[in-house]
Length: 259
Ligand code: ADP
Image (cartoon, rainbow, N blue to C red; front, side, top):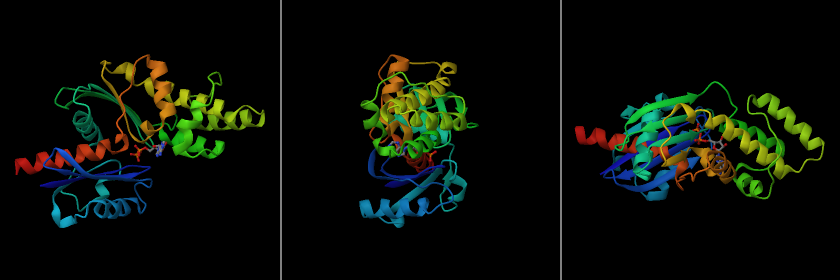
């Protein structure tokens, strides 16, 4: 039986179809979130990818900031619960999660069965989130998908404020006008995101098996900056941006089993 998890965030729409709660049949992400055509587009692309239709889906769970807009879903589930479930599916050994999405960052501590033990969240400020990176991508004229590669060509040493996106934006414009190498500025930008987001982790029990999720985990520059800062390897799935949608599809499967 197939279940569907849909995760509508501020920056992107993600959807995953799971077979019998164990196999990922299809997964898509569209870089347009709540209040846009992203949710409809991701569903069209998802069904086109696997050849299934809505009638093949036994149950649907929605998560993310825009989950209540998905009125056709059977139920709505919190993002924290879905991230915990999704990580437990991808990395059963993991106990600590850092999720960086479009407009927030969360540190989550989970049990061996994927139950949330505690979490901390930054949702008040764009610094340390994907939004900060979107602003920097525009100023530096480097696409989000190319930031990891360009970071690898840069050197450490440029400081970029992690306290405020507006200050950081004018500081980066000023660095550019002084002729500072773009790749070096990008290193500073990635270090800044990490120093802000990692602050959340110090409030969570930090277990050795540590997973980085969310759209920002696709940026290998941020992953390397995190490994430098934490002095440990960071687990990242090729499906990092789909983690919440995977968790939602698992919640739908659990709901089906209870029925
Ligand atoms: P949300 O769930 O809040 O909508 P996501 O978890 O999808 O957000 O993360 C969105 C962020 O992911 C963007 O703000 C951007 O910084 C980053 N991102 C999106 N696509 C890419 C990509 N191809 N490479 C690197 N970073 C990306």
